[in-house]
Length: 294
Image 1 (cartoon, rainbow, N blue to C red):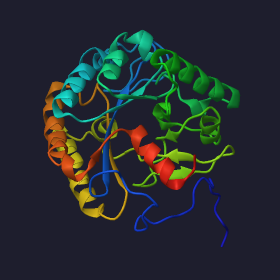
Image 2: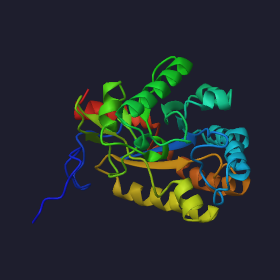
Image 3: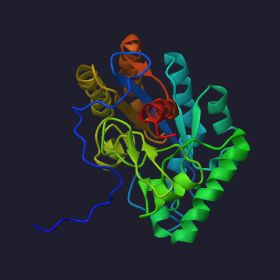
Image 4: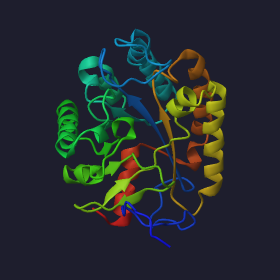
């Protein structure tokens, strides 16, 4: 039979075989939440859509996205503080200028700041090699300048990659990437500069995919989080699994959805003694040391 083309980034490895490390606490399950802070161009480029796009400037969708940074993100920050749960914030570099003070508030709360490209008005796979390298360099430099250190992790805008993205990220110093959703454990990706860690990032327990794309209700999405968490906790002993949740302030920051999200995350927080509630970058560092990949 003809052998199908492969990306050759990692070999097949069943989840029943645990990685050569364990989490520093809990019963084998790490939990983290990722909040996407995004900024979009006015009247051009890509937009997330509440309703089908209108001709530019699309006032409805653009202002809905701006609401997320002006209102929803602050409500989510308040909720995570109340629950005492750590948070990884995935930042478009343009947010520093587009929503001054927003990233700084999450930094002050002890959140990890990871990179999410320049803006979600663009997709890096649409660029050539030089353009993609420039996108990564510019986003990294802006975050490093604002935060005092370069980000450890990367999620591509629209989770878009070219054939060379992991190579480019590793070559400029990234420790982990969130684009690959192929496993419930952190796994090393082969790159031309050495291994780059892929930390699990959810496409199912993701409010944008569940609510905006599939039109799931807020209570049903909260049930997804609870059911995913409970079942993974049952599967986790003897392993090193990761249960992630992905949030967007213009989606679950809405008051009628925030109520249900609070229920789900309160359920997680109530079992903090059985899990390692942490941030994506901390998961990456334990896994990198455990694999011995430097």
